[in-house]
Length: 606
Ligand code: AGP
Image 1 (cartoon, rainbow, N blue to C red):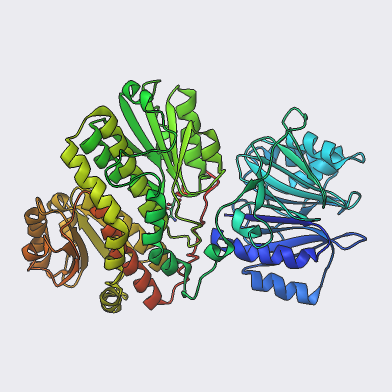
Image 2: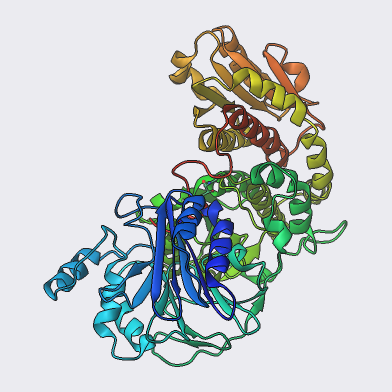
């Protein structure tokens, strides 16, 4: 979704803003712009489409200065075009604003401002903000912003500059992330850490309702009540390199290959041979009070939750429901103080998941967040956060975040089981040993890339595909299908093997591509019947199996055999061939793999 960068210091703001925006490209956008104070006035340059178009515009109308704000826009209100892109300016042109989020009462505000004589240049909800700030401006930009935001409903992260006070950059947020980067004689704002990682590692995370007045040498933060807030900048742990492609053609492929490392990092300090699982600061005394768990998440994180439910119920014997956050928030779930809600979110900013967290907390539940982003909104509102150490995930299609979420959920299931004595020590031990072996197992599965690439060349022209699985493999099949849809734009659906004959089998005809995941020796004979049901109707079946299940699946058209015999951890390893398949199919089709159409990395609006 939209990205924000702001700069104040001695360097050329335009250059810093465009570099920062480049690093935010992964969030998804359809237009971009910058507003820079050139020493006399604020100059705004915008363009529809990729950043390259903005750079072309900047070549035609160069602007330099030491103060500026920049934005990549993902259209919500008003078509993607230069006119609707940010920054938006006040009537007198002296105030410029970039905004992430949605102003829900913008129609009323727009009518009120029009009545007062303000004219609007765009169709956006955002444009009310610079006009409101102008309306309240009487020589103090901080006071004007404070008054203006008190009229806004909805969500916002704002970067604001004012021609009359060119030594200040103002930042304020509510329900949309915003950070302040601290430099030496320069400071930055950004919607996301990678934007400023090449400039500084020291950041302030703004809380909801906080306003910051930033000069090149100072950062003053104020609470909702206008009182100063004392906080220290935090050091971010990931390196700028982690946000670069490192020779891979796409971030997605790089991130697929990073999974052995990401899983090892997520396990480190939490699981060691012969030791009980350490689930960070989770207080084990709390466990006995929980009667029920809800896992709440969206997209890939929801698919991780489906696996988590099976692991928790198997090992910890605690009833667990998994809900799409967008449904959970409106479904009147039965939550009380004996409920634990696990919110899973790579970004920690997904609006629906955040709303689920708030609902859970207001109903008295304990909220555990599993997220990848330090200081994210969900981590701030949860009772406890368990961080996955996947490192920055830039590709819109999630890969390493998913496998590390799975690892977090397995660790939690084991932690509960050890503390509740709900599983046999031998059973717990087997899972722990498998977890410790995971980084090596993942490396071996990655060696299948060549074979998967060959398969992708056979199937990339398809318009429809079907994914089948049973139990844990069904959850993994759903994730595989989502990956394919997201980046290759091929329609695909997932069915539980046993459901086929209840309807979907009517869709199978000669050469229909069916991808069947079968990693569980106990039920692979059942899966094999499903494979036969489709192959006898002419389907081209690709089975993703392991050494234990392979002998069962002689009827399929192509078999990808993963090393090992499979276990409760199979979802982690079988994710890899499915990610690689989606990647190579999209590659053959020549699609924009890291930035698929219509999608955003961090979905901060409902
Ligand atoms: C996955 O490939 C996605 N692009 C998407 O489904 C994502 O998982 C979902 O939007 C949730 O995001 P989050 O983990 O940041 O909350």
